[in-house]
Structures are given as structure tokens and as C-alpha cells.
Length: 296
Image (cartoon, rainbow, N blue to C red; front, side):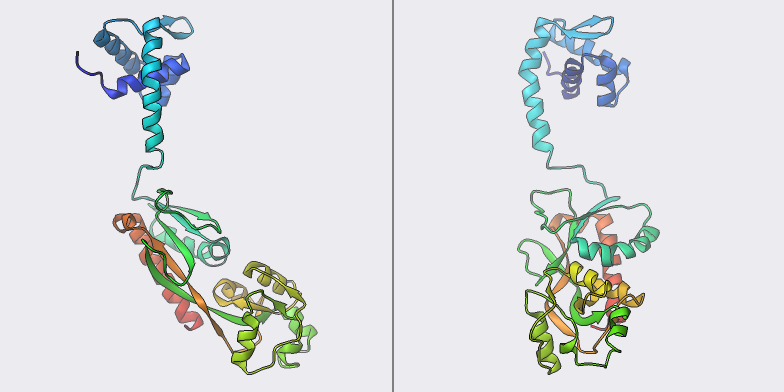
């Protein structure tokens, strides 16, 4: 006896679990008549009945139960083995980015990508955690912040990051204007990494004796600055839209370059993904526009 086709066994397992040919046919994406024909062919190949046709569905014969018990665990194991290997489509692109960069820089630009490539469905997932491309095969690329060293991955530089003191117009007005007092006498929002000390050294000024608050992430800095709480040593890349809209203003021409930059990171498999290649070119064009606009 020749081996029955795998789809016959898959159809049998689905029918046995659901107890209904119509529902099983839906899960298999075939017609009821096609599935019923497959079940009859499977029974003919084996030489004994597997299913009892009833008014409201089907039940397993003793032979059907034995076949189910033998085959179902193996098909389940095959399905589980294939779970980390999602079907790949050039028209679907999955990208990871840190939430602050996604919301402040990437998302406001995505409309241009969609207009250029309406056939590509981009799936943007925001997370502070690094993607493990070896295990999370659904991801095609990521935007990361760092020094560009991620072993086993291609890392392409996009944008350097610069730090500049910035505040709300309301706070500037309360202080009497940008040049009314030395910056060390303004209410400054501190950070745990000592970036203010580096900035004051660059500017040739004495740092303040204290900060009004210590904030440990850029989103909190920018939010507090927007609310007029104090002066943030803000990230130019992430604050660009706030600066252009006038919600924040720069308090100095001195800019401090950070030791880390923004990168496009991707595994070798993405180099042949046509959707990713289109996104990669577009992203580099957007990064070039940004660098030309902010300088550096």
C-alpha cells in the first residue's frame, strides 16, 4: 500500500478533533466535498472505516481512534517545529524600534514610505528589548541605538545624536529671556549619566550645584521640558518636531555629540527581501534629509 498524502492525514486529524466535516474543511481551506472525498480515499487506502457519519457530525471508529492516537502527536510536533519559521512575503515587512525613536522620528515619516510603496505592509513593533533575530524570525530589521557593534548582524549608520539645552517658551518667558541668566542658574533637569557635566565642560561654564530633578529617560526629559518644569538636555533627533513646532526652543548653540548613534540593523536573510530593500533605501534617504537639516 502506498503512503497516504500528508494532506489526507491533516484533514483526518482536523475532522477527528472538530467532529464536523464543515468546520474541518474551513480550517483546511478546502470545500466540504473535497475533504469528504479525501477521507473516503484515506479509508480505501487503509482498508477500513475511520469515521462514522452521523446526523450532526462524525465520530471515530475504533480504527480511526487508533490512527488518531498514532498520527496526531507527530503532526503536532511538525507544526510546533515550523512555528518559528513564519511564511516570508516580500510585501510584508516587520521592523523593531525603541518606542521613543518610533514615535518621535520614524512614525511621522512613515506616510511618505507608504505613499512610495503602497504594496508593502509595514509592521512596526516598539520595544526597549533587543530583537533576537535568530529566534524571532518574523523580524526583518531593527532601528537600534548604540555603537554599531552587534555580532552576526549588518549595522548601517543612520543618524548621530546631539544634546542641546532646550526649554518651553513659557519657561523662557518666566526667566526673562534666553540670555537673562547663565544657564547654570536655570532650573535644570538632570540625568544619571552625567551628560550635563560634559556639556558644561564643552561650553566652558561651571555646572550647577544641584538639579531640580533627575530623570532617567529622554521621554521624561522632553515631557518635563514641554510642561515648563525645567531645562532638558534634549536629544535633537527625538525633539526635532517639538523644536520645529515651537513647543521647545534651544537655549544654546553649543551641541554635545553623544558616544552612541542610531543604526539600521538586520540579519543576512533580509538582504534578499525586496520589501526590506525598499525600506532600507527610503530610511537612508530620510536619515540624509535629517542630517542635512540639523547639521551633522
